[in-house]
Amino acid sequence: MDYPQYRKYLNDKAYFKITSAAAWEEIQVLGNKYILHEFTVNIFPDRNFIYDMTFDYERNWKKITEAEYEEIKKKIK
Image (cartoon, rainbow, N blue to C red; front, top):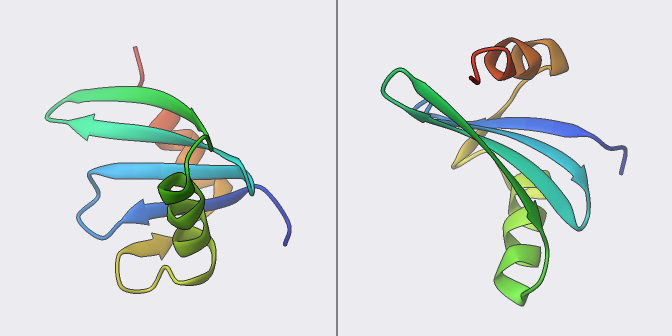
């Protein structure tokens, strides 16, 4: 698997940059506010979350480009 991988929720409320099999960034959209969270896998559910975003994403996430992710990241203040 090549990293990073980029995803977003189908409702456009969160954007993800999967940086490795053990870490990801999430930009959460709350109204007009954009909040960046960084996560590292510490527990088994986190590992499952990354696996699902990477390999079984079609039901919950949409694949996006790096440019789309970076455009959203510019909105963080």
